[in-house]
Amino acid sequence: MTSLLSAEWTRLFSRRVTVVTLVLIGMLLAILTFGFTLTRSTPTENETRLADERAASAAEIYDRNVEQCERVQSGLDNPQPGQTFPRGCDYGPRPTRDSMLDYGFSFHRQWPELYYTAAIVLAVAGFVLGASFVGVEWSSGGMVNLLLWAPRRASVLGAKLVAVCTGVTLISVVYLTVWTLAFLAVAAGNGSVSSLSGGDVLSMLLTGMRVVLLAVAGTSLGFAIASIGRHTSAALGVGIAYLVVYELGALVLFGLIGTDYSEKYRLSSYVSAWLTKSYTFEADVAACAGRGCVPAAGFSGSWQQGGVIIAAVVAVVLAGAFAAMHRRDAPR
Image (cartoon, rainbow, N blue to C red):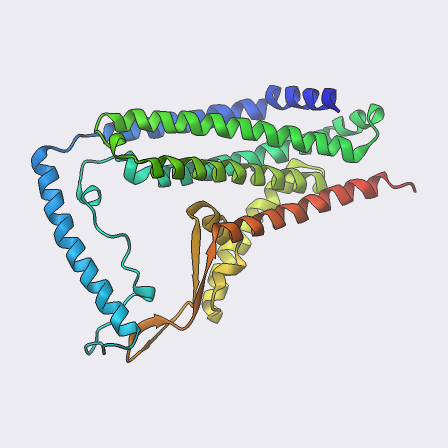
């Protein structure tokens, strides 16, 4: 088994599609880093003072609006004629000095978005690598040749899955490390790195872990679908069809028929919950009455729930791949 895993690892990193994928994500990192470098600037003392004043004024208005909204929605006060409130009194993040500064890139403020971007890149790259790794083996006849000296099909498929998942894990960890260091270097010029607290660093590490696990999940999905279809194009076709036909099509369809909580029927909602640590499912239409505009009902999903849903989907598709492998191995 060890020799088989070693051979699969060598095959993975020697394949042209793997090299091309590494080059592409490296180029993307370089382009984004260069772009943020151009927007880097250090705020002056006067700009910082003005930002503090603007943040204090905006925060006062923010707190007053939230308090009034909560009193109306709890029934303590009545709204003024024509006055409405956001769902759940959600006015967005509370204004701070950092949000009022106009000095371009801030690692402290923007690192979550950078990690979410990395998650999309790595998940798509993992899906393609996983699909091509096993799909090419099936379509070229390499899998059949391999089974001549290793007839245990489940073991062979499992070794390939472990090899590509660990390979993508290594790629993701290295990529995230370089990604973080590159943007830290950009942020060092404007002093935003020093504002990172221990909680921020811990949050970055946990988010990075979720990004890596999402990339592994994407790899497993691509691998399983390509194994079932015995071709790389099968996985790519299913992936594109799901995004275009279901994710976008269902969004339009559910909106037309007025389905409440339509987000809970889309995998992307749980991916968002997994990355951002929470996701709120609300009715599509708010109920506007005498107490202002509030959703008729709603519930929230946590990152744990999102992770369970993603893991369940991956497990079902992988089970289908191994079941298909077992049927092919059954005696006629």
